Length: 261
Picture 1 (cartoon, rainbow, N blue to C red):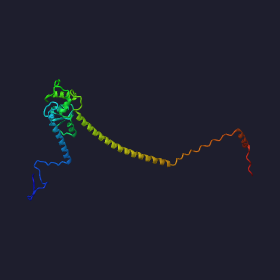
Picture 2 (picture 1 turned 135 degrees about the horizontal axis):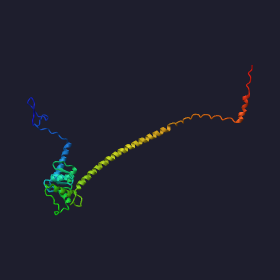
Picture 3 (picture 1 turned 30 degrees about the vertical axis):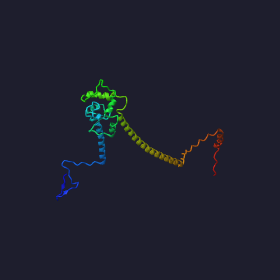
Picture 4 (picture 1 turned 90 degrees about the vertical axis):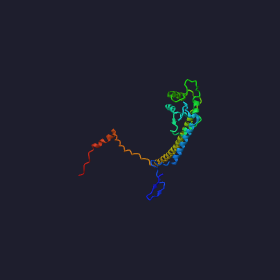
């Protein structure tokens, strides 16, 4: 470490005055959660490395070449680099040891009794005979042979046993994940339905109160008056009969009385 010397010649030994070496940057302190996450990831990767060091997993599960530096997570085997490229052609999930980080469900799948090179080969090569027309590859230089072998072994399942089980670990891990997702979705849907039920109940009670108040207001209102009809015109007088007309004929001939002088 380099210490800072003051103008008076005294050496300042405080932590703030300590300088790093030239070209060396100070490392930022990580938070406790980041440190815990890093420890968990390192522990999971260490578990995969320990599984890789087991005698059946040191050689490739498909061509017996060494080292088996890749993990076939679709079937739970350890394979070499060329075989991993062929598995990728068939959309199998591959991760490199030392280059990728493994999740907890992936590690639990690799630790399953049905995983590992020995268990997987016992399942997929249960009916294989050395006298078969296709011979098992013993090296990884012939990619065409590897491609045909992996296709018949995993895709067509030519020598597979009738018992299910080589990919039981992957199936169980997927089932556990789907169950956890279903449980979380059901809990969220129940909470949302309960909240929606409370909202609907509140709205229905409010609508009932409003309806009753409207009914009371209509009962208190006075009945509306009917609009008055305009008076109808009087019917025209009927014409007099002939007898009545004869009675008034004499009055027309009478002269008016003379006025007094």
